[in-house]
Length: 372
Image (spheres, rainbow, N blue to C red):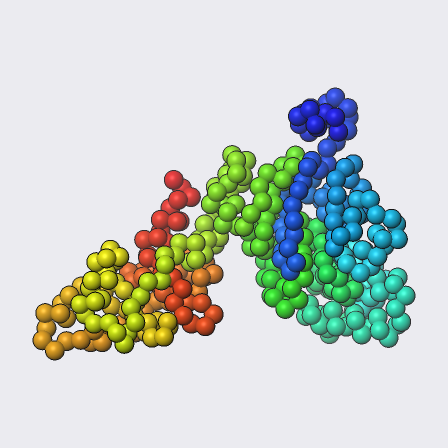
């Protein structure tokens, strides 16, 4: 600890003492209901970190607070309460009992709690239903595929109804296609369960897919914490930049990240002259018209200007109601086709109102930034 405080790094301390620095001053907060991903290479300290959270490893210093209980210093009784009521862990290698049925594996922790057999079975069945394995309750682990076995491990974690799920590289032993399926299943499951999840991985793509917040570890320390867009768009140092340089930015950044304010004209009050004036003021080639805040169509400068010279033409004559639209969280990858229209893309919020616009050039500028 004295060497750490003196500024020595992990390798220097090992050379001097033979002791390994597992985690070094890793400070972070996890919000209720989010998937907090800790990402790092082997030996970075991520698995040690997650084992500290549930008290399997005691830190040399610092605090680990779960709803006010300091897991680092609490009594054995308090730690048992945290493990029983607050936290469950899903392991990398399934850790299923081969001689027990799927339902009995899922219910094992409930048995330790002293729950009755009938209630254990009911809770286990409900957890298996959540992960899509309700019909396999009486099967044995060796009758299931790797992906199914990992879902059993997830169901076992869910059966105790914890507030926090700790997942230590749970999908790393799976084939790539199955792994991708499990990632999507976890995302879908989280939409309904809204658990607080701390997810450990060495795979940056997995981190970017799952994490609402991502912490990147190196040599026991957290070098950057942020959203996927922050990690890829503004890497904290050369180490993070090297990790992210080959990432497909179109799968990370969203429409909201390149949006401009959704300035538009009210359809009922606008005419050709006001539409042209607005486009000139905003230096845009097109502008949206809204009806009670909801996009009703788009008009281009060229068409509005041409119509102005035609006797009897009105704004509605050149209003195009077949315009590109998306939601703010749409990935740039999914905007390609819309951007090819050449028209600005309308972004709408939950009630259908215009919340911003995305110019096609902004999409391609963001994507090209990664190679700059």
